[in-house]
Length: 165
Image (spheres, rainbow, N blue to C red):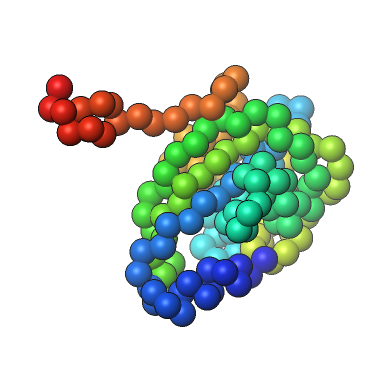
């Protein structure tokens, strides 16, 4: 799916400056395999996910994004992590950083296929034979495999409150 209209409207106002957005990721497991897509823009293998629309629940966004990008209908079962992505700059110069909600999901229908053009390839991959992925995505996947509750990063009271201890 192309860049959401609300993001384009923001970009008209702020140009390429850093934009803070929320995303939802669906880590879909089926019989020892995980659903991955190869991004059309940079060729990297990744977990399906994308920007949460205004007023959309994160779990709803994960289901929508998985379907839009892969053709798979999935149901979220566990929120496995909430975190902040590394800051990135897209080819057009847009800077962005994401608050990411990652959900472990199970498939309920559909066929894995390129569905909306964001991916050039989509498929199921055995967990013991994964294609090369960005280390950040690998960490999200690893957390989703074993999490029974949401993982999160906490910098500590001294860092957050500036108490020095």
